Length: 317
Image (tube, rainbow, N blue to C red):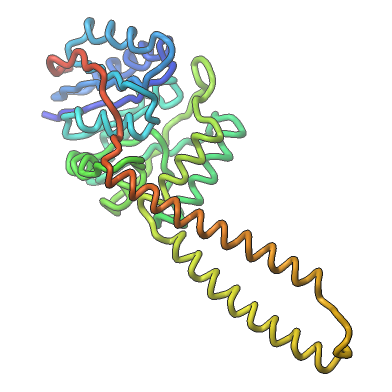
């Protein structure tokens, strides 16, 4: 008998969450020899989202509600959910209705056919232009910094086997990045095509600041390539500076008379550029050291205020 866990991080979704849960119930009602649970993680929503979650837990024994004490972000909420999900397959999806729960059977089928991880690939994305731009940058970052295959599409709608979920929750440091944890755990990752819908209500909770934090989490927590790029840049600029120095000496001797002062503008441009590069590289090193400091001080990924529901599994035949 298959055991499926649905994991949903929730933020400002009091009105859309019941519809997402109904879709899960409908699709699982068509599957035989399957039991399932739903784990809803409230990321300190300012609205009545957790009240809705508690109501859903009272109405369904197989729903677990987790309330975080502050807003830790989507990936921290996912980590909290992974530590409470018990299924042989864990499916993560959004709370706004854009990721179609009614097509979860496609992800389950791909897992049963041998994949370790399955990401939903959208035929037509219905995000805003800003969100699509952020997704493009995230795609570039994961490919360059984390070694993601070029033809692999990653999204917030995905399914993992139990052993991948166990590997993910081994990560105990602050600033988790689930995509990085998945990519370092297995290469057996596939895509399945699903439909992508418009948000049922509201707008995305991702701001520019949150996207920047997410990207920093990705390449500072799971890659040293930025440091290597900084090292190689230092070597290149040192060589260029040496060659420019030789050129300046030769120009002074053979082209201009000794009394003529030349190259002030070029010199200032080089100094300003090099100063900026040095500050950027120092800031990058400081970012790594700061995150190491927070990890050494055991800064929490999340803090749980309350857990409700979750008294059993539901079987559908």
